[in-house]
Amino acid sequence: MMDVTKFDYEDLPTPFVNSSAKTFGAWFLPPLYSLVVIFGLAGNALVVLILIKYKRLKSMTDIYLLNLAISDLLFVFSLPFWAYQAAHNWIFGDAMCKILSGIYCLGFYSGIFFIILLTIDRYLAIVHAVFALKARTVVYGILASVVVWIVSALVAVPGITFYGSTNNNMVCSLNLPSDKMKQWKQFMTLLMNTVGLFIPLIVMIFCYTAIIRTLLKCRNEKKNKAVRLIFVIVIVYFLFWTPFNFALLVKTFSGSLDNAEGSTRIDIAIQVTETIAMIHCCINPVIYAFVGEKFRKYLSTYFRKHIAVHLCKQCPSLYRDKLERVSSTFTPSTAEHDVSIGL
Image 1: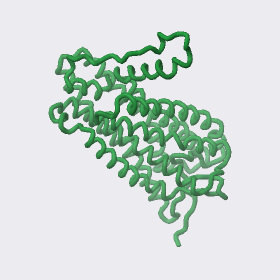
Image 2: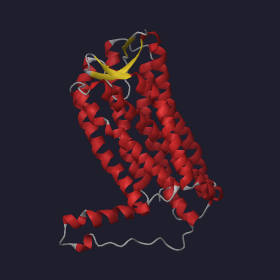
Image 3: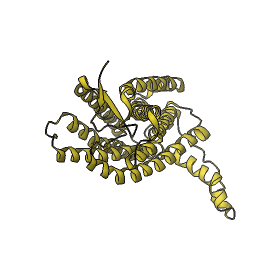
């Protein structure tokens, strides 16, 4: 029978291993996790609502945006449990530990894959507009989404398999076979860095470079705005995820962290950078959905018809609304371009 010991490693939901880092996490993590949950749930729930109620999933972009929002909702769903563990102990049992860890990992990886698909979707719509008319259909979007969910589940299997409650069910954390702990630690760190940072950045740089070149060749008054948005997407993703992935690499591969002080510092650094990375799921609705002009109109319509009407029944002008029609001068391809670049 294979010997299993506690995996002493800062990974995903349980980023503390020593008393100093645990004390820091007890006051630092719960309030920030709570903010991520509140804004993550609100923003992504609105995306799901508007896509289904108003846009009715009529394009490949809509399908990807819906799935990205669902991924982010899965991601934040488990955060209250990790926040409670950070402040106290794990009280939810071994089965819930595995289930919630699985949900967390599935949301994490699927969210990254759908960001990649949205990037490729924009690339096809702008750089290969003629081909995109045939390729960017709802059917293909659904098929690609199904594949992403399957792949995400497979990628998340190692993490799900080794999660469990330890220390008399007081901690939900990773547990790895003691005879191959180092190899598994390195594999999972490289997997997270490859899938969570390197692949998305490579795809973004390639696709958005081609998009910018195409936009610079055309005469479009919205060109500068689109180029700025592209830089924002890449820079935001890089700034939010690079520190966490770098901290994981240092923790796993550095041999200079054997002393208590160095270990505590990197443990705290992982707590901080992981929380920063989590905030990205709150920003996704803004940079991928709400920045679009039509999406903002739908959001304004929903607010005035379903919220303002209850807040101010004496002010009918606040919620009397009529959806503006899209200009008849737009062709299907140019309209798709606006959606695909987030205008």
